[in-house]
Image (cartoon, rainbow, N blue to C red; front, top):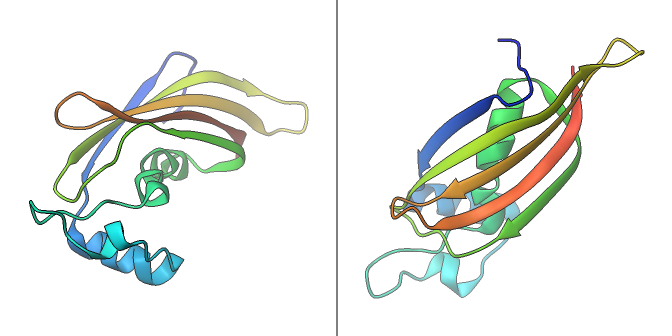
Length: 125
């Protein structure tokens, strides 16, 4: 798929307790809120695990990221449905035969509340 400026790519994911458990193991981020369920039986999803939503979209399009900016707006809990919209802001061929890309993203939960926003830039491999 060839991208162009203005394209919006959407990805949706529901994080599970197992996702948080595996990410805890890999990252070592063992904050009490990631390993102890709240009164509703939910865990707080690590911010960087939530950040895999826009990076998944980049990976789908072979983006080699050079910069990434994340603003974590509110907690994500296991069981939340997170919808991530990535908007292509720049997509142009460079002299070195690479394609430069800049994209912004916004992630919302099932209640339409913003949980994460930011941008990334890099090149297409």
